[in-house]
Image 1 (cartoon, one colour):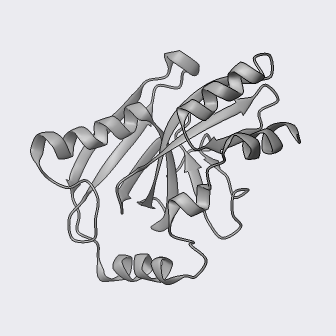
Image 2 (spheres, one colour):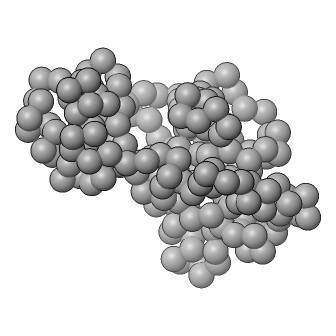
Length: 184
């Protein structure tokens, strides 16, 4: 069961379900596709912009040193939430994505896909910030069932890029990030 510490965020798109690894979470997932790298920057008043590159983040921080927090690298991917068997977008830190990728690199087994892929457990230690630790555990190989394949294909067939994570997150250049973060 997804604990109450999971943040379901439907602000990005009314038709997508997002969830983010947070303290005290317990999750069982099945990745559908490989994770996509995101570069995020936050203002001190917690506005966020997904930006094109770390270089854009560096330029923004140089221009607005008292208004911006650090640049964060995150990863997002489509997955099946095994608690409710729904298709969601998982937002995860680099350390979780790295652990997932290490299995593919070390064992040679794909971590995501329709025919190949596996279930994972992700839990955290309940701490915040630099003290949070993620426990990512391979559970078992899990080819998608017919119903799961149908759910993924239905999502892929939707118009307007509702499956393409690069379109859903839509990265900003320098000027677009200024507008989004500061209304400039």
